[in-house]
Image (cartoon, rainbow, N blue to C red; front, side):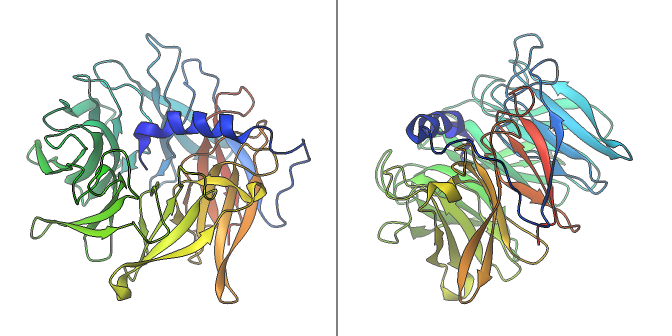
Length: 396
């Protein structure tokens, strides 16, 4: 998800949303459980959680906050550990100007328990890629330099235990963002593509891996213009080193793609978009692998009660799409929902309307497990108004 605009877009949406509905009692659908795992206080623990959480094999959850009260207040890396009496909270690291600032994305964790992530700024001023090892050591793997390799790194993906791939939203030699790789084994950063607001578009997001090992991503803008256009789809084949612009969203009915893709076992790609012209309240679309990745709009949000601005998608145990919207619902402060294919079409079921006391503005969807549970975050709200980590049970 393009993190560089998270705070800006969220603020615009909050202002544009206004008062959506009168206060009503929060009702969760029958069979769906909801509980808050941790309420942030914006003390040493931090606050403002723009990214989601990553989950390891033991069920531990990892995430980052954008702010805290430590030193200059650049946020924390945290861990929630499950136990018989619930989850225990641990601060793993405090971010700084040298290690990273404005940390807004979801970390990733490998099979050994090493955690990786990026911060939008900091380091040499243009963002950092970092690692927190399973031994408890934090280190910066790469500091971005702006014109050379990009600025404002976005979500990352890990292939195996060695290669990390990611994008930056701005700068690079083409001035419109970059796509890059970092090899842990060789301690080497490689620039794979510089976006130039040409046919390739500008301000990239992603990447996501499909069933064949191909990396897929989007651009928010373009093609062939600066800060305009409907956006593009691109992919990269690590085996051949080939970068390809696959699709121009113009004339598809889809504009301003927002989330990273999620891929199913057949290679179909699913994503969300949120047109900045206000023509709708967000949409969910699919690129069909068997149809040359032709785009199909699966669902359009048209009622504020059902959500405004869908974020990252994931699959549940039964193959339904689950996610969050960061506005809308009964109280205008976001929803959790699932999308189910039923009676020849996709239908939305609102699982939760956040009212502030139980969290506000869930931005990055939910990570799911094999026990019908989803885990997510809210940017603000909760007991202390500084955000929370929550769990939803009974998703299928």
